[in-house]
Length: 197
Image 1 (spheres, rainbow, N blue to C red):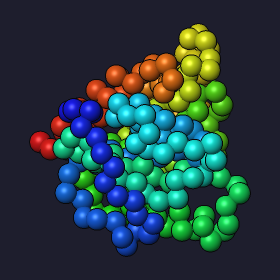
Image 2 (cartoon, rainbow, N blue to C red; image 1 turned 90 degrees about the vertical axis):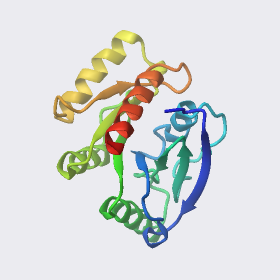
Image 3 (tube, rainbow, N blue to C red; image 1 turned 180 degrees about the vertical axis):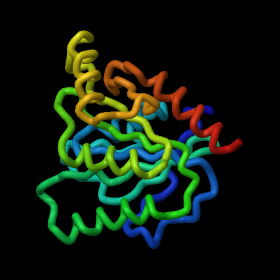
């Protein structure tokens, strides 16, 4: 899978607008300030393809990126307080609508900030994925903010707190230092290959 072949495809604001799924999809879900856009840019070898914002909760749409022969799907960040109730409901409808759709789910990557214990929303998301039957993995972001030893401790702690099944991959990543990015690329490429078989 050539991650250099990446381009923005489209953004959708309601689940009814979502296009039919015709190729493997790798979806990215996480809190609004978890560093999703930065991670996507790093994976796709791009600086500003996914818009990075200093304002959490900026991704209010589902954004599709064409990467070689798969789609990367950037889901709206959850858990941002300073958003109206109506907007939160729209986001919720959008994410649920996406997951309830008949799609070629190759992998869902749940992003969690390695510096903190998982929030209730993080736990809700991983519980949903554990019960969904979808292939999924956890990417711990912002590992450059911790020492290697502390990052390893947090990795074990988060795995335990989330009671993750042993078959769910967990990758420690950093968009700034590049830690774990190749490992995550390999995981994604392998998942897409399985969907196509």
